Picture: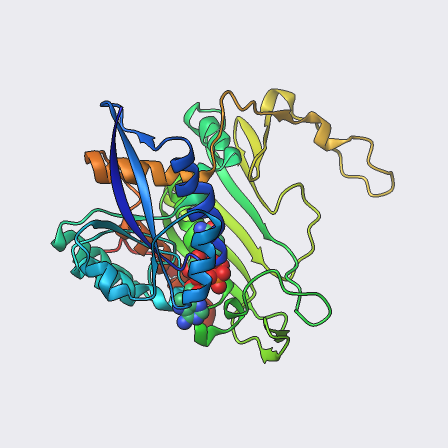
Length: 383
Ligand SMILES: NC(=O)c1ccc[n+]([C@@H]2O[C@H](COP(=O)([O-])OP(=O)(O)OC[C@H]3O[C@@H](n4cnc5c(N)ncnc54)[C@H](O)[C@@H]3O)[C@@H](O)[C@H]2O)c1
């Protein structure tokens, strides 16, 4: 098999997502498996060029993984004609400008979400990429999770009949950082640094709802900052100015109602850190990151409300595990593979900068809905 290399500038690769999911679990994993088989006798071998602000951190990371290229000079990387793709996993506030520069330099771009901090900026990126004729993709990793793939299989197989509602519960306790270290970066809790759970999670909810059930047509959100004071990476206290919980109601095409709670101030009494329950006329399902359980109408128990007696049913026992019926790869890697095929072969790819802009739009409208205390229509974004 002949090998074709594809050089990818990876910015923000010292961060949580950039390092673990995109570098180690996706591109290095692809290299270890001998590259991506393009199906035409060619193997596409990704060659990461690490980009960031701190030279020593990049150098250490490169050494650890036997990589030879790293730089703090983004302009030089973008001017290098041998670099085909620019990837961005920086903090959200730094993304839009870097993507604009990459598109202007004629690079294909692949990026974490949210693509920008506001809808106008996100749409402008999509327009610029379209005009420049470059290929573009946005991470929509939840779609590639085993639990959601199995849920999608149920939807596609007509299991639910008419879908009535979707209820999502996402969250876990993020430590304040004083007596136990916080497990998320402190910028997430400062609005002035692009933080906030709405900007972080509503883009995910947009593509999950859209791809599985239908486009979101309206949003109403209640947003809160439950924990107003936190401690940063240096142990210094700071004011948490960004929202850390959001309670959203979304109407979808076809009249489906979705209600999703997102919170970094909730303790987990669930099987997984995110779970979606879907109820339809013919059946229901509960999907998490990995598992999916279903209950058909013919196997639905008939509870009778009587608070004077202890519950006699063990309700969870009536649910059936949806089988894997296959192997699931890491979701980030699976999406990278599709994007790389799109770049190399021109194969179709739907999760582009316009799709990314829809996520930013939903976050923006969610925040506005709370500020104005009303439900807002979500229009189709226009390029
Ligand atoms: N797809 C997902 O499931 C998912 C999950 C978490 C985060 N994200 C997104 O990934 C991006 C990175 O999040 P993370 O949790 O990896 O963050 P992080 O703080 O761990 O990493 C941020 C990276 O950006 C770099 N950076 C560039 N400019 C910076 C600046 N001015 N200040 C601080 N750091 C700067 C840092 O050096 C680091 O490499 C965010 O946009 C976030 O929304 C996506």
